[in-house]
Image (cartoon, rainbow over the protein chains, first blue to last red):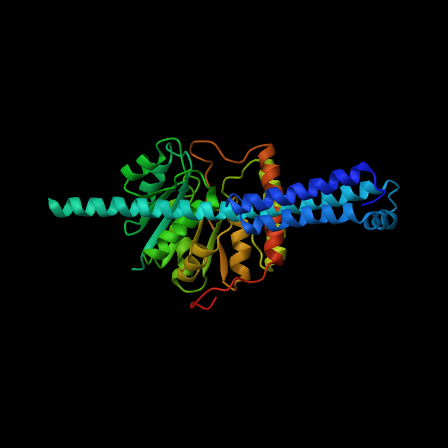
Length: 124
Length: 239
């Protein structure tokens, strides 16, 4: 990390902090492993690219970006897009499951009413 | 006589739902009417019960697709051989039921859809909607390689295999057009018959103005993606 600008320190510790927070959340079972993975990767990539400045500079040169740290932020942005997409997928799954549950509740409710009516009829 | 279940999805239709139930019962006394109350805030469920229907009450509004599917689940679990789907707003005429059921009972089709456009005396909806229907009609007909005149019609009858299929796979949100394509792609035989549609008898349409544009965009996406999907694998009934 020698000779690098303060921004690299910032992103390195951001990545490290992110990774640690994610690990702690998983440890406390506040975050499921399946959603934690992408977050951990984000943190790792942030750290890796902050550490190996040549990686960022290579990437920036390849993309024609003059200010190398911008490449770092671009990468971060890309990861956040992925994370958001993961949430949209998870949300869709959840809403499908919620509808299924609602249907099941409606069917059970109806069955209870039927059974009640039947037992009332039997008593009479 | 084959047992018939008439599924009526209803959301805030207390003004009309009882009339729909009674109408079906008077034309088809042997049919069971199942009103699926999609989380209504009004007295839809009570009105339906009073009119002699069975009622499924969804705990909150899940959209017409989810409501109709609840009906198919009920049909499957209770062993119905034929399920009819009919709107709760009184647009569909129970007098058309025999025409709708005929191809199904004769074994000529697995699904029969009532089309208002095959009938010259039927009610025509607003221009925006008509434009939407024309576009959708072209798209569905092209993708399914079968000519459909009224893909948004919610007046339809299906046999036992499709009851099972729809209980498992039914499109949510605005499912009429999409379910046609879905059934067609599974290899089911579809047929349209002319029916009369009346203007809605009360309540308000869930589709108006800008929302119908949003609806069109969503339907186009849904239908386009359905065409890209592989066939669903379903169990023992072979389809």
